[in-house]
Each structure stands twice: as structure tokens, then as C-alpha cells.
Image (cartoon, rainbow, N blue to C red):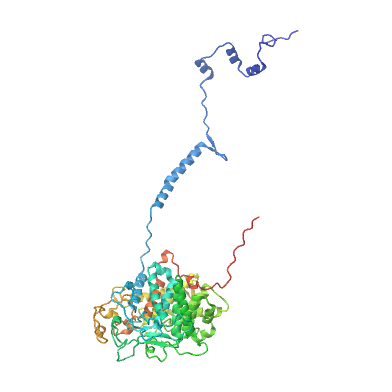
Length: 628
């Protein structure tokens, strides 16, 4: 029997020669399409459109494969255009602004103290002796004193150069050396300020003019000396023979004898010259050859000054010297020994000097820790307050500890007390009604004492700022460091015109200043007329104003009642001095704010210690990184 065939057709397998592969391919095709092919019946385009509909559009790829992440194409485009817009808005202006050359920002205008400083330094140019450089800048001054030291046969080239001390033509080496020490100290502490006001090269040139001359006053190339020249020129009180006081002559017209005074014992003068050369060696540390020359000369002079003084009382350099005693008589030399030993230590780093400065016996001889009012006044004759502050700097900045701590702490305590005495509220010193501190009890030349101690006050405030100490104590009273700056400014403000007379005591500063200065060169016309010894007195006695303005000279100052007699005969009030102007320069650079706005700090912390070896071993470097 045969099974039923419901679809019709034969059960026979077709044997028309087609292979199995063809049959398998045909099985995957639409039977209708196969049938159409077999019957050669093709559909036209219209028919295909009826049956198939419109062709499906090929979809775009909406993602981008970035390798580590797949990102939408739209997001990628937004990011690209965002970066492009950011470059145009931000980057392009920055590039343009960077490419435009910028002007160097101008420093802020100088304050009144910087203005006064420019003038105060010019006074030293007017006081120069010797053959002047063309750049000296004082048109009414010329070469002078070219025969000075011709009677000093042991000095090569004589004693030409240096500075005239005041309104006369004597070269006093004791105050001259102190003036160079003060100027050098101010440069060591405030070199950045000097540079900011454009006076750095000028002040160093003035110091070198002085130290070059001091090196000529003794055999500075030797290691041991037996004498030093104390001054050139001389005068007798109420004398009647031609000398530097009896004659009223410009330095260029001097025709009277000018002796060179030599001394074989000078523990005070020698100490001050050593201090000046040592301090200058730090200020000239960038000039290695000159700095070494100064250090060698300082060491030679220090050995001369201190020779035998520890065991025997020596005579001062001015003792029984009528040419010196009435003018710059030294009352002691122990203060110069502390002062010079401190400077020698800073200049050399040799521990023998700090050991000498901190020796209890020296402090006892100098009465450094005694409560004596006048020993707290810094001056050409008393270096204790300056030495105390100089040694306090060592304790505040380096703190060497044993074996110097006890002595340094004593000097530090004395410095604190000296600062307390500056204030009117503690009634240590009298003040004028106008506010001038009478550190010399109302005697002549009050301003030179005011500026010297104003310098110490401002410097001590800067020391405290540098070590982040807010102040100190005066008994039960806490005193902010800014009070010291306020005191220093008050004294300088008084001198520059904030006083009852509303006049400046610095010649050439302000609209009203002294016009009859006790000064031979300033009062005598520069008219190529050579006036005789007594013929020049007509210019001393005239009521006319000075024909030559002695720019920057700080005169002696008013009396204790703020009164001032602008007369050449009132030399205690109208005569300027080297030490007065040195203190003025130091105080002005200490209080000026010029330079502070361009990153200048309170003081230069490190230059003072450039030769001092470290007290403690340096921190060892970290061990090398271990590598397998």
C-alpha cells in the first residue's frame, strides 16, 4: 500500500542531475522566488515597490570607539568645540598679553626720610680732604690738604685724604673712625634699603674714602705697630697764632702749619679704628681683596689697642694732649674694647674675639651692667649701648649658649634697659616741649646724640621683627617694638621740621633751614680770591647767608627750650659734625619705608654672620634611597 500524498505530486526523488549542494541552497530561498526564476518571470520596479515598500535607509553610527571608552559622537563634537571656544576666549588673550613687553613697575615715591637721606650723604662729599674725584658733586670744593702728613716720615705718601671733622679744618681720627663704623653698620644691616633708594654705591664710596685714609694712619701691612696718628691739624683754645681755629679759611686756602699728632698709647682710638675697619670689611665682603686688607689692618690695630690693657691701666689717647682734650677727650677705653672685639668677631669668626667681648672682667671694667644713666647714651665717647646691641644680635639670631650665654644675656638685659630710657614716660631724660630728647642734658650739639640713639632704637625694633618677637618689658610694662620706631621717627621728625620753630635743622631740606652755618668752606665765597688767615673773618662775621649751601649738614641743634640762634658764632647750635651726620644717615635709613614695598625685610639677617662658623653641627643629609 502506498501512504496518502496530501500535497500532490510524486513520491519519487528527482534525478534531474542537481547536486545536493544546489538543493541545500535552494532550501534557504523563498519558494516563490525560486518558482519565479524557474519560470523566468521577473518583477518590474513598480511591482517590487508594491511588494517590498521603500528601501530602508542605512543608519549612521552614533558612537565613536576611543579604545578605552565608547563616546557618543555628539558628546565628542561638543567637547571639541568647547575646547576651541575656551582657547579663543581664555588662551589667546593670555598669549597676547604675555607677548606684549611690560614696563618695569615704578617703585613707590620716596618718603621724607629717603629724601633727607640723599641730602645727608652729600655732607660727606663736602667734608672730603685730599685730591677730590671729578664725580664729587660739590662745585665749590676743590683739592686741599695735599701736604698733610709731610712731617710724618714713616707714612708713605703722607696723610692725604680723609674728612674734615666739622666747621674747622682739623682731621680728628677718633670721631672720623666712629663715623665710618656707623656708616658701615648701617650698610651691613640695610644694604637692600640703600639699593632701593639708589644710594648703595654712594655710601660705600664714602666709607672707602674714610677707611683708605684710616689705613694710612698706621703701618697697616705690619702685624705689630708701636704708634698711630691721632689727628692732622691742631688748635689752641683762645690761641693767637695761626692754626685751624684762629684762621677762618677755606680748606683750599690753608697756609698755616698743620702738624701730624702721633700717639704711642691709644687703647680707645685704636679700638675705634679696629672697629671701623672690621665693620667696613663686612660691608665690602663682595670685594674679597679689599675686605681682607681691612681685616688685616683691623687685627693689627686691635692688637695695638689691647696690648697690656688687661693687666695694666693705660692712658687714653687724649690724656695730657692739649690739642685733643678740649675737643674729643676720651673718658674711657673699655667700651671701645667691647665694641671692637664684637666687630672683630663678626669680621673674622675667630672665637678669641667673642671670648674677649664676653669676658666678665671686661664687662666689669666697662661697667656695662651698672645702672648708670649716662652710660646708656650712645655717642662718639661711649660705645657701650652700641656694643650691647651688637652682642644682643648674636644672642637673638644665633643663640650660641655656653660659655657666652651669661654675658650675652647681661648685654641683652642692658640693651632692654637702654631702650626703656628713651621714652618720656619713664622720665630718665628730659625732653624739650617740642619733643627733642636731651640725651646730653641740654648742652651743645644735642641733635647728634638724638640721632645716634634713634638709630639704635629703630635697629632694635627691626631685630625683634626679624626674630618674631613682638616687644620687650620695661619693668611691669610691656612695650611693643613699634614704640621704638615711633620714638626714632619722632626725633627725626623734630629735626626735619616738626618742631616749635617749624624749621629743618638739615641744611637744604625743607623751605626753612639754617643759613649761617659755622663752617669755613660754606661761608667763604668760591670766587678765586685767596683770603688771608684773618682776612677770611669778614665772612664769619657777616650777616649775609652762606654763599655755598652745605647741603645735608645737620647742625648742632636748638637749646633745651627749643630756641635756635642762626649765627656762625653760636657754634654749639650751628656747627655740623661728621659723627652727627653719620648718626643721621644711619637713623634715616633705619626708619625709611622705601624699599619695604618691594620685598625688603627689616634687616639683613645673614651678612653680619658671613664669617661666623656654625655653632652646631649641620643637619646630616638624608640617607640615599634604597634600591633593590
